[in-house]
Figure (tube, rainbow over the protein chains, first blue to last red):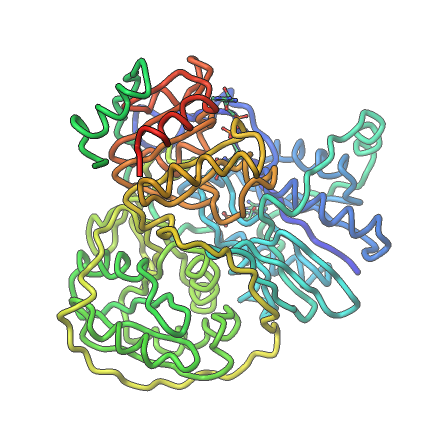
Amino acid sequence: MKILVPIKRVVDYNVKVRVKSDQSGVELANVKMSVNPFDEIAIEAAVRLKEAGKATEVIAVTIGPEKAQEQLRTALAIGADRAILVKTDAPTDLGGVEPLAVAKALKALVEKESPDLVILGKQAIDDDSNQTGQMLSALLGWSQGTFASKLDIEGNNIKVTREVDGGLETLSLKAPAIITTDLRLNEPRYAKLPDIMKAKKKQLDIIEPAELGVDFTPRLSIVKVEEPPKRQGGGKVASVDELIDKLRNEAKVIS
Amino acid sequence: MAILVLAEHDNKELAKATLNTLGAAKQLGGDIHVLVAGANCGSVADAAAKCEGVSKVLKADSVELAHGLAENVAPVIVELAGNYSHILAPATTYGKNILPRAAALLDMQQISEISAVVDADTFARPVYAGNAIATVKSSDKIKFITVRGTTFDPVSATGGSASVEEVSSKGDSGLSTYVGTEATESDRPELTAADIVISGGRGVGSAENFAIIEELADKLGAAVGASRAAVDAGYVPNDYQVGQTGKVVAPDLYMAIGISGAIQHLAGMKDSKVIVAINKDEDAPIFQVADYGLVADLFEAVPELNSKLGK
Ligand SMILES: Cc1cc2nc3c(=O)[nH]c(=O)nc-3n(C[C@H](O)[C@H](O)[C@H](O)COP(=O)(O)OP(=O)(O)OC[C@H]3O[C@@H](n4cnc5c(N)ncnc54)[C@H](O)[C@@H]3O)c2cc1C
Ligand SMILES: Nc1ncnc2c1ncn2[C@@H]1O[C@H](COP(=O)(O)O)[C@@H](O)[C@H]1O
């Protein structure tokens, strides 16, 4: 079984982003970039399937700038076998390559590579869209197991446990399938130095969007990007008694 | 202009998130229809027909729609889509699972989790864990939209008298089957609908210790929430997670207990009316958004609260 893992280069989750003064987007210059955390979980899941003898090859792919090779190298260090960069200078967070376009590019790659499984993150932490996996599944006419916290593969049958609003739901999917990861699926390993060195020698192909015949023209134009309203916090109380008094008599939120 | 709202339900009752989604539809203006896709879901269709502002309910009632499988529900939406300028669903795990599938089948770029309607083509939505608000204008013919419940008032569930019309299912895709649900049992209010939410974090330390958080919640008739760290550690079920990648809440009162206040957590609760933080670290970032911060050991403060709140 071959597995394709789409990963996205995003602003690191520890960075508190700043909105640009011209309201065109957020400041990305000199900001730490990382693999989208959900996508690290996706790579880990794929690599574990390979280690368990259930997968034969893991291919990491990203649609992004030249520099996204860094994130592909991270995927290779975790254990992906090879990587593909679909190179574009368009922004991938806002006002550029949107989930539908990403899904179309991934569909073209699926047709080229014929994987049996595509594991994506449930959500990119920059655009917070939570769409790409579902869209790719639609375009391919495959089954989908979104927000996965557990994955069991037996031949052609994939049992997936999903984190849903009321608890956990289990579905049985017919392969080929699309999986999107939730936080509890696994804890990604840290790549060790020898693996990082090895990753430098693994195959990384760079292709142009035109080779996939996909149009990246955005459907959504950015009118403006603003800071959210600031919350006035920082108030303190000295005791439990004062807290109860304030909640009852000042905020009037408890009786 | 006509708007289709995808109803969330369990074949018996209409989920409250649907009412907030209808609230967003009302702001768009136009004829509002509701799609109820399920099995033996007549009571849901009837409930939807009573909602304020709904002029027609479309009921697709068939066994393969029982569990809201995206592969089976999306084609029903696609079949109806041509009649609508906007198709809305709640930004819950139900809506997030289904709607992008339908949008892609029609070559439309969805607008996720809107927090405001500017005009019929233009919407605001939080991005980067709510650290920026993007206003986007769609050039698509049909706007597929998921709606953040906390920023739209629910419409009234009574007073309407829409007609209910049957529409057909597109059959079973055969791609996926429902196996089962491990539902989180609780008599407390639903997290996203509660007036008061009491959340615990890693500082609570264990599943057993969560009992003091639950006791406080029960004293106040509140829902219980948690940080990701508390969920990851197995103190509470996954569906308690509040945050960027969990549930978004905006109750009258939110209490964060033993939670540091990471941006991913703040993304899910900072629109609450009143925020209380109890943390032993006076520099914890949660205090920056708290109206009432109490620097204290939660194992002293919470039992004291429980005893003083009486009953
Ligand atoms: C992709 C991604 C998505 C994420 N999504 C979410 C999300 O949706 N929701 C979310 O919450 N997090 C999310 N996180 C995790 C987030 O970054 C933080 O790691 C998490 O919120 C921390 O949880 P915490 O505050 O409970 O734990 P900690 O940060 O460990 O804080 C524990 C706090 O408890 C206090 N404490 C300890 N003992 C006591 C005591 N006895 N009395 C009083 N106080 C005490 C400590 O001072 C500390 O401030 C996400 C992270 C990533 C990478
Ligand atoms: N530019 C991209 N390149 C590769 N994969 C992507 C890209 N954008 C999104 N994805 C994948 O789709 C998932 C969901 O992203 P989104 O729908 O944007 O929230 C991510 O976790 C990735 O797995």
